[in-house]
Image 1 (cartoon, helix red, strand yellow):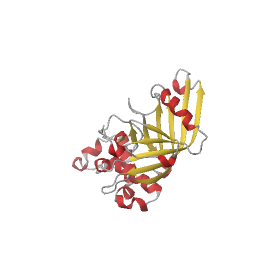
Image 2: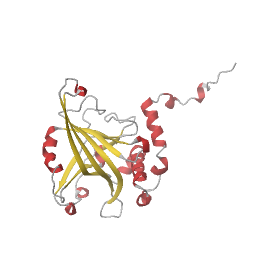
Image 3: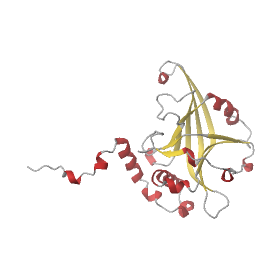
Image 4: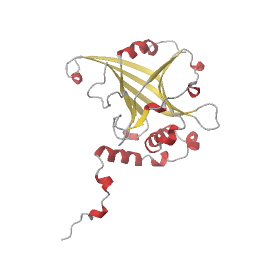
Length: 242
């Protein structure tokens, strides 16, 4: 009786050494190829979900080329919920846990050659879930020094993106009053620049997260008193890339 196993020469040594995480990452990205490989000129014609897929695929598979367009992810906060849990088992010591859950509307700004201003594309609604603590809790899948990761709703991947991470009490103290400001002309954005976004993949061992997620090493909160007065001055500034 002959064995059904493939001959040793037919086994790809690279595939044989892949971790479960890497195999899952490749499977997810394979489902995004159709949208991800579409040219940037077609972004305006895509749906929000297709633009989201385009972004995730290119951050993993086309990172160097995408960096040239200085992508900026902005989450316009549309609602906030602050939760305090007394005696949380997740902390191990029965201490107090504070969480900030933000509903938001995500957009992607890209700098195109020949255009003076960035072009902004909507990429759908989502959530930002933050633990407020002096350091990242043990149950949050982030590397030391990492603030968060961007992931997606896997039932429709990636239709709604969300950010899972943590901020210090000092940041919450600075931003809390802005988030609860009843003035309709005030708003808060969470901004992620291109040099703080890194795919969670082999070779990027300074970020962690679920398969095909995007590691975030810095978060920037911006409060606007008048939405129409928002100005984009970062293109004129010297950028330091990590």
